Length: 159
Image 1: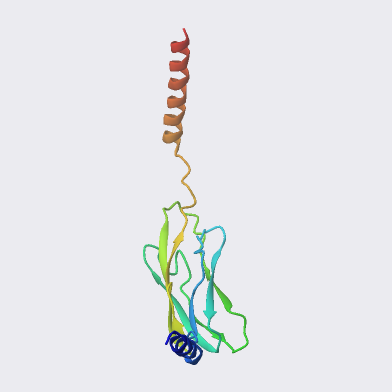
Image 2: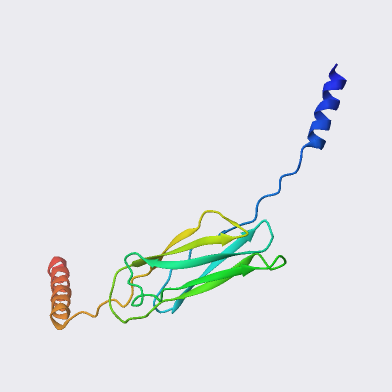
């Protein structure tokens, strides 16, 4: 009886069909941080499972202003059956010379033809804070006064 069960089990394993993973695409990690000074951010999309197909990509604003902080882009990445798995595209970032905090925009994959879309299929790209403001004359005066008071305080404490 034990021998029959083992034979049946091994025949079930051998007879089980192999299920291939469906071809799919997603953004690759790590997610880059954009800077105005770099002039652009390059993103990589990776295909897994082989095969040919295409996937569209597009940008949309969040706190960053399209056309001011970055150039909005749309496009399509196309893979032939024997292409390498990774493809890249670049989103231009504008160096506007203005002091500003971190700003963000979204990049989305889809729709796709010939592929499924895996996570992550949407990224939020941060444009790092840049172009720190130069202190005004009155701010420089306050900084100088604070430095003098600190020196005077240290001198008084030593006596």
